[in-house]
Length: 82
Image (cartoon, rainbow, N blue to C red):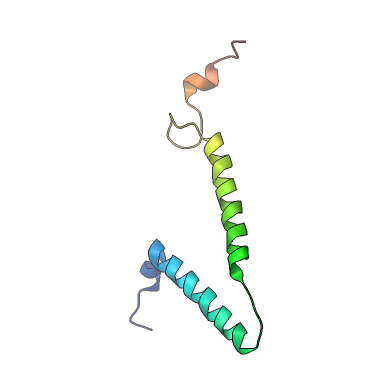
């Protein structure tokens, strides 16, 4: 364990996802030993729904024609033309 660069491992997104999946699998297996059923699929689906909802809201706010999340100077100076 001392010969592993944990900082580099946690920067690898694929490894982190695999670690999370392994943790869920181990927790579920341990719970089965104690005769406790835990179906984490429903929990994961709800988490994914919330995360994608947040990404959708952020995607609606961000102007794709500029870098970052703020509007360009031209848009900021423009008055409503209606």
